[in-house]
Length: 129
View 1 (cartoon, rainbow, N blue to C red):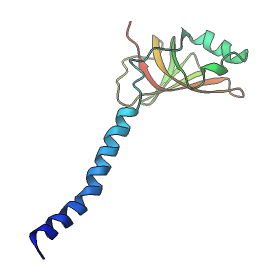
View 2 (view 1 turned 90 degrees about the horizontal axis):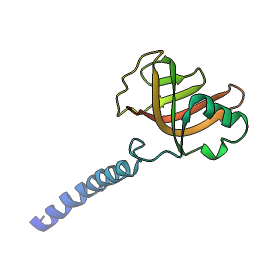
View 3 (view 1 turned 30 degrees about the vertical axis):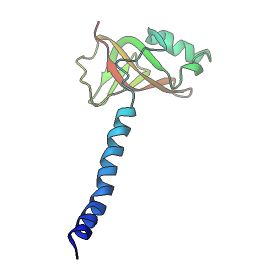
View 4 (view 1 turned 180 degrees about the vertical axis):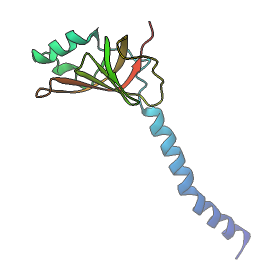
């Protein structure tokens, strides 16, 4: 086996790995950063729920919203605002809050459950005022 054939086999073996790493890098860069994007709506938690109850919130689905309200419950991945807005936190950002504090979050509005009367927000990040 010649030197050129050996080099071609090594190159051919490493090429899929290089393509896979480049693909993963570019896919990660396409993910939007909700912290820097402008919200479609800035409101408090009661107004957001009222919009969905009056069937005016459907245009907010898959849009960025900024909401403020009191934290009623929280754990490591979720903050619940005013008992009916469930915000799933962005795992890349830290949140510094306690139960009972007023907080402002920005994230992607996923859906509204009419049965449970809950709004779900994904990739929520805390806005410090």
